[in-house]
Image 1 (spheres, each protein chain N blue to C red):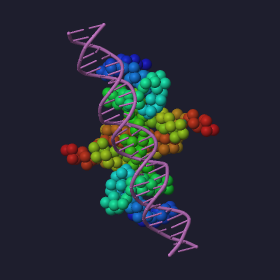
Image 2: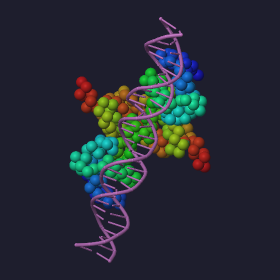
Image 3: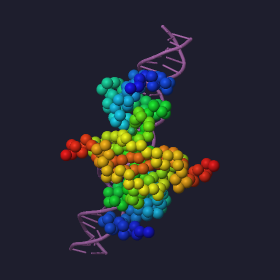
Image 4: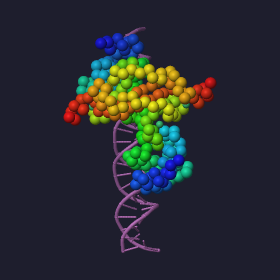
Amino acid sequence: MQNIIEVLKEHNIAPSMQRVKILEYLRDYKTHPTADMIYQALVNDIPTLSKTTVYNTLKTFTENGILVALSLFDNEVRYEYNTDPHVHFKCMKCNKIYDLNKTFDLYKNEFIDGHKVTEHYVNLKGICKSCLKEGK
Amino acid sequence: MQNIIEVLKEHNIAPSMQRVKILEYLRDYKTHPTADMIYQALVNDIPTLSKTTVYNTLKTFTENGILVALSLFDNEVRYEYNTDPHVHFKCMKCNKIYDLNKTFDLYKNEFIDGHKVTEHYVNLKGICKSCLKEGK
DNA sequence: TTCAACTTTGTAATCGTTACAAACTTGAAT
DNA sequence: ATTCAAGTTTGTAACGATTACAAAGTTGAA
Ligand SMILES: [Mn+2]
Ligand SMILES: [Mn+2]
Ligand SMILES: [Zn+2]
Ligand SMILES: [Zn+2]
């Protein structure tokens, strides 16, 4: 488990309380939250927290490569700590996004029909394990 | 080339002028346009056209399975006529979305890690053929 | 202790989209 | 042909997510 303050210092980002809490949240809850989910999760802890701060902070972290912003499904931006490419699965019932242990190097840096491919995403949708159980 | 009016009648949708023009556009220009792109393309032809009509019409067509709404990249909704699953490629320079002649039946209706998969998307990004040529 | 640089905050603006109600169009019944 | 109800289009307002902006607060080096 990485030391959040060290991570920030390595990127020359001042480890303010808000920044540390936001990055800790992303590190500890690997749930691909939206900006609003992060705000809701932290505002009890930091009652003065502003949603603008969450957006500013996520932007800073993303620009510095600490986080990745993903637009995989349904026109929403999700953030995650880990940057290794992997397959995503979104449950249509509970809206959670899961990482799947599937890798793919499918098409990476290839030319297809003359187009140069530099990024590739495999996105799956369905009903997740725990919703299947509940639904009986 | 299908008769647009027939298509609408088969789905019990009154073939109003606006609806016919919008569907004709999607049939003839397979460019995965956004609602706004469709509006911009048609407003010269139909000066009274309202953006609300474009949205209403796209919703009707999508609900009736005539069109598919795709949220593949960058938080934008794109519409297309053809519904056979296929791979998409978005050019980061010109923002066009291309269909690729790659099929995949990867994971379809399988269970992965206990999750039931019902939809799957393969989305690629890069620089398209014609932008590569220009960039030369 | 001071002060400039940086960070956070609240408010307003923006963009894509939806809600809503008024105006218009259509076609079947008279 | 006229009427009228149902369906369609339109313009405006509302909405939610995000960004712009400027004021207020914080920090750390001189
Ligand atoms: Mn992930
Ligand atoms: Mn397509
Ligand atoms: Zn679920
Ligand atoms: Zn291009």
